[in-house]
Image (cartoon, rainbow, N blue to C red; front, side, top):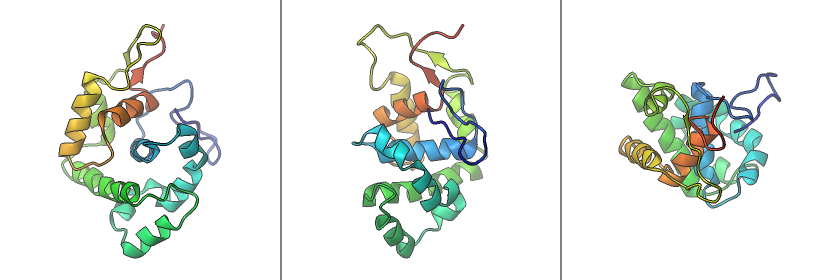
Length: 173
């Protein structure tokens, strides 16, 4: 989960990981998880503010309209991971997200419907925590059908943990 109190004084999806229902944060986290692929999460956390600035506060409508000049600007920005495929995925994901919204779906309602709108507790034995689950497989496949990129099952499972859909550590009291 990510703590964000630098601007508003409000914590969103903070540790301990609380269920996140904020659309912008859900969209941001989905893209940051994709950007993290192959890198350490610490690298992405250290670049989070730069990402937020570079991607217009994660405004999907603005991101969906990015042109080649904006892509070139992003690829020259040392504050983000300058990977053409990951930048293109964020732009593509904005378009896929807007298509969902046009269908009357929000990320919040869509994602949380997979877990009956309640976090699930996975109390795995020590050393047996998986990198993906059948549920993350299902969500990954559905997101892919909806046009999202960098949403493989391992990324989706990490995302589910980061937004509080999955409590992988201990049962809630």
